[in-house]
Length: 299
Length: 283
Image (cartoon, rainbow over all chains, first blue to last red; front, side):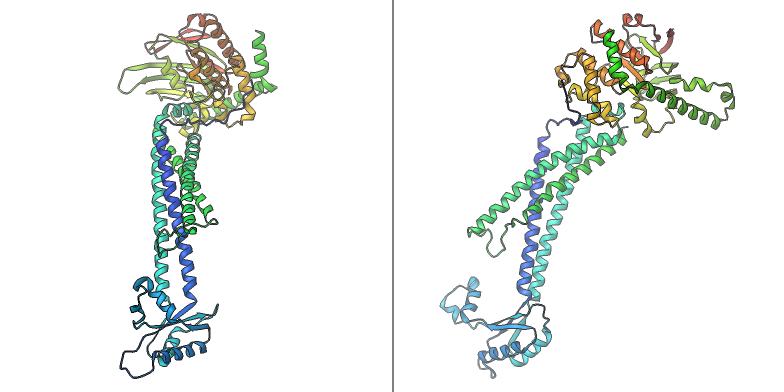
């Protein structure tokens, strides 16, 4: 009878190992969510910054009643002249009254009363690609031409958005680190328990001349495989969640109004593969170190 | 005996390399032992021993015990002043009643336990000064048949027997034939895929023996190796040990089976209350 074995795992599948698999799968799911969140935050912040950084907004505040000087329309025209004469400004155009009202609509509504409010006039200016505009000089010129003008280069918003995106990204990294530590701790605990459960086998292998590294290899392979599988299940569940969110948004159902879509693009999904791979490697390293440390204590 | 001849031809002396390997091993052991003993005596300034040629006694020994005592924790000594040596290529029975200390003595040889006192030398190496990192290499030169078999239940008979070869770093393709032949010879050719819990005590014992001899160890120690098999299989296994011994393996068998001992012209050492008595020399 021909037997072509010899590669069977030295370590048996442990009874009662399912809870560890469940823990690892949950960790993998959370890690994939955190990773996905950081990817979305990065992408969204990049989009916001790209959308704002090449635009300038000039606000002309309505002059107080009975104040001598230029009217609102005169100041808008003067500001437009300045903007169009400035090097680096590709395009400048005032927003219509309807456009301005639509901007405040989410906060103030669309009542007839709103139309009577003294809303500022807005001018949207687009900076030519690659051009540098001297903002302080432009501000001074605009003040001279239109005393009630305010130039907004969105630096404050861009800075806040960057801060928000960085916070989300670093929070995600922090969560990933905590999950990695928890995974390592769980695997370390399981490895110690496994050594205890299989101490007779470990003793026998030692007695037969096995190096500690051989025994450690058996454990590390075992935990690498089981962690890889369990974390992959978690990552797949997270991917399904992201795809579902994407599907809902595609159907016009916003998960959270005002916030960017929480769906990952298809091109971003492969990043989630990193979760089981890294989890497996963490398990491999943890199991190896735990076994070698334990064997040093025992033998 | 035709079976034995076939076995010798196909397994132990396969590819005609075994005898040459034994010769090399013996020479290497001799040289290592000489070097070690010479260094040790020179270090101690014991020139007299060097000059008198007492070294020969060291290097020809696979195992040497000098005034060895052994106690577990604070209990009584289970071995007392045990002094003996096993020459390379010798065949020895260790006898004694249950609890006489046979298993303990074997544990000292396979380095499972250190002695409480005295000197244990294995392959010319004083174990008290041998680094722990060198133990695995020494252990791989020893084949052990445990009284309780100690098979891995989750592995097949084939994988259990192949274990020492895997530990030695041999690839599966390299050892499959050896393992299959050996399992066939011990009568388990049709049970290679069976796991130990599905086998009888006697079958498990034969796997344990096959595992101990498959790597062709320099030293084979067996604790009651025929305790669970019928007399015919027992005799067959003893013939396997004898063949290995004829090809150079030093064999030490702990047993209380008088019939087994009487059939062999081997040396017998008897343990009585932890003391060793030389009963019969090898003829």
